[in-house]
Image (cartoon, rainbow, N blue to C red; front, side):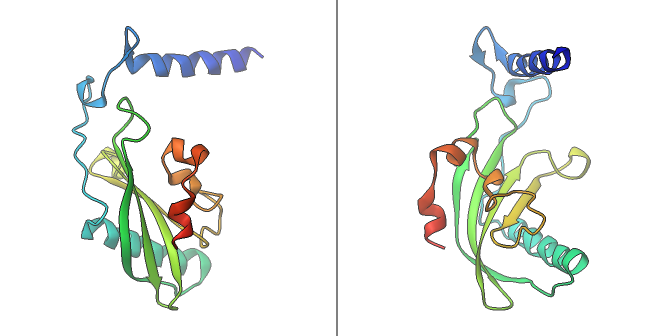
Length: 160
């Protein structure tokens, strides 16, 4: 019980650090500021990184030759959707065509300063139906903006 109380107090302290007198302080105005500038969802570098990492994961961990051949219907589903006080993130979805001619929804986030050792952009991604270790289960929902996980965005997945 004492450990639970400590954890709750720590969470409250984290939330309070992003506020000043009840007013949310944007991440850009903190001591270690963020710029809030992120590439768009359609950025070729981001999409190429996802394709490369997907092929490597399929080959190294699942003994599969699946690769992403191309993308279409790339769109943003949120920008800083969890609030100004959090690390800037752009939330995106795209339809990927794989080398077996199957179509899969790809859900991804572009994150500021969350690259290797905190340098550069970070990209988290998930291919719906191929999240075999269930890292972002169910159906890559963990990579979507917090509110859409609970309020729903059925139209996004229904089109794919």
